Image 1 (spheres, rainbow, N blue to C red):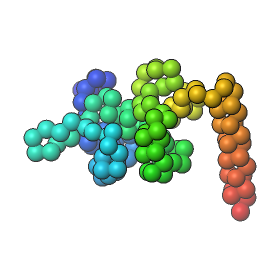
Image 2 (image 1 turned 45 degrees about the vertical axis):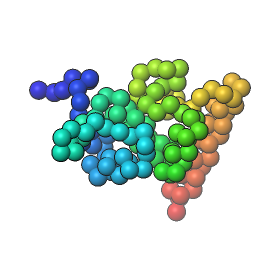
Image 3 (image 1 turned 180 degrees about the vertical axis):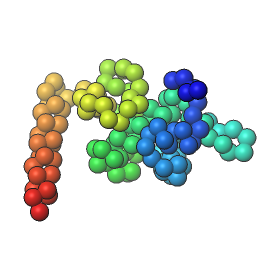
Image 4 (image 1 turned 90 degrees about the horizontal axis):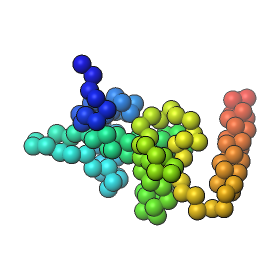
Length: 136
């Protein structure tokens, strides 16, 4: 029987859901103060749905968007994004493969259009780089 969406996950279930190894989750816990699963007697970790959303955001920033660990720490420290939330305070992002426009967790402090234009320019530059690297 599958667990419900609000059920706690063990480290093995969380790792499988996020597509990372268990040791990666333990490592992230040492690097990011905001990654704090519940710990029971004996140190057994249990991840709440909110923890999974936080980890999905960290995974996306590190693996998909190319941030370094220090970069994610800086973003969080500067409150440049809200971990695990969609723009506008929507539901937590739990799926790393969702459309990018729905994953962006940067605030709208810039005048409308600047952030979107920058993102489009960066994506175009990445596409050109990918094409150049693929031609080798």
